[in-house]
Length: 232
Image 1: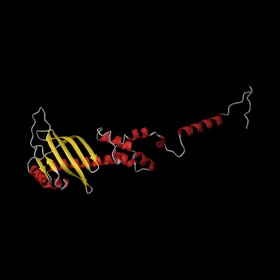
Image 2 (image 1 turned 30 degrees about the vertical axis):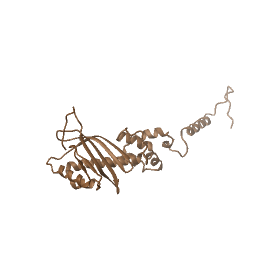
Image 3 (image 1 turned 90 degrees about the vertical axis):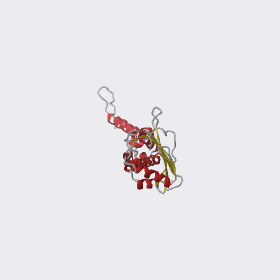
């Protein structure tokens, strides 16, 4: 229907129609039919947003719906979480199975490494026997510098340690882990509840029959002013 001219002969604008057209145009620009706001975010923004989540939250997010699962499984999100929770040292690597699997394996290795120190604190020889791989190529070097080779010798060395009256309660810091398929090694500093240390420790693990087993332990005393000597 044509507009009715005003008294001065000027035709008024079709305000309602124009507003509708502008609104519709804005809607098309700001929102795509059938596409969520998350899907419209550029990958960099999505990764940044997910970087604020911790491990349990990211796992729960992946179980909500297909869109969230896709976002939560993004390799860049898991890489960012790895750097936040562990270390920036491995920024240049490309894990064979992706950062999500690498993150999960790193958590598993750190858990086994923590169990190792709990076993020492509790002087639990049977638990130590289960932790080590029963093989002739395993090695253990205590801070005394003595080398024990083969499963039986290694277990005998731990039995000797556990026969001491004093238990060892290590405070572990600066833990760094590296994983290559079925092999992993962990480096760290450890402080004792008795005078001495800190110790520099390297633990090596191998994956056998669905479990990570220790195959090498090396403990040495970090020199302080070139004169610290501790026998372990």
